[in-house]
Length: 270
Ligand SMILES: Cc1cc2nc3c(=O)[nH]c(=O)nc-3n(C[C@H](O)[C@H](O)[C@H](O)COP(=O)(O)O)c2cc1C
Image (cartoon, rainbow, N blue to C red; front, side):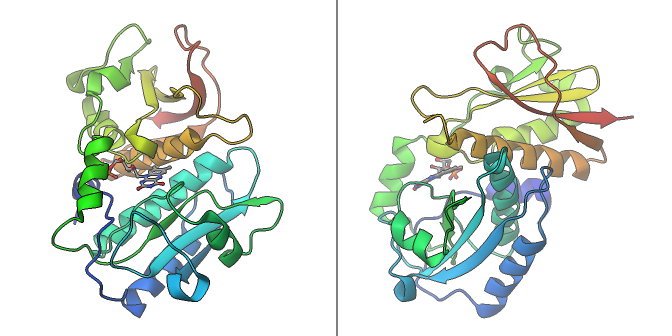
C-alpha cells in the first residue's frame, strides 16, 4: 500500500472480528512504535495491553481484547509529539491490516493508567484498540460515525491559505504540496473537529490550531494532539513526494492569526 492509499483508506475501527491479534503483528507494531521519532525529540513509552488481564474496557469497542497505549512526560509540546508519533503507529498498523481508533475519552481511564504505571509527572493521552476489522460495523459505531460526520472533512480552501489568511489556497497553487495538504485534510481528529489551518508562504508551511471553544482546560489541550497528527501526515506525505523539509518553531506573526494558536513551521528546502 502506498502512503497516500494508507492515508486515504484509514478509518477508525471500533468493531473487530473477534480474532486475537497475531503475536507477530503485536511485536511488529510495538517495535515500530519504540523506534518512531517525532520532531520534538520527546520519548514515549509503549505497551500492548490485554483487556482481561488489566480490567480495561471501552464502551465503543467490540471484538478485540488488545490495546496499545503510550505515556510520556508532561513537558511542553507533549501533545503534538504524542499525536505525531501515535499517528505514525496508526498508519503502520493499517498497512498490516490492523485497525485502530484513537481513544482519549471513551474508556475506563483509571484502569488504563494503572496498567501503564503512570508516574505523577507523566501523561497517557490516548489509547487504541488493535485488531482485525469486522465485515460489518456495530450499530453503535454506525451511530457514532454519523454523530461526528466521521466520513466528511472541511473543504481544502477553508483549511489552507496562500501567503496570508486572506487568500484561500487552491490545489493548483499548492503545486507539489497539494497531496501533502490533502493528507492533512484527511487526518483523524478528536470529534472530527479538524482544528488545523496552514498558510503556505515564502517557502514555508505554517501550522496553526483553531481551537474549539471550551476544550482547553489550561493545562492540557487535546486539539494539540490533532495538530501533531496533522504535522505527521504533512511531513510523511511531502517527503514521499520528494520535498525536503526542515522543522522549526518560529511564529511568523501573520496578520489574521489572532484567533488561532501558532504551532510549528515546515521550511521547504530548495
Ligand atoms: C485525539 C483524538 C481523540 C479521540 N477520542 C475518541 C474517543 O474517545 N472515542 C472514540 O470513539 N473516538 C475518538 N476519536 C476518533 C475520532 O472520532 C475520529 O478520528 C473522527 O471522527 C474521524 O473519523 P475517522 O477516524 O474514521 O476518519 C479520537 C480521535 C482523536 C484524533
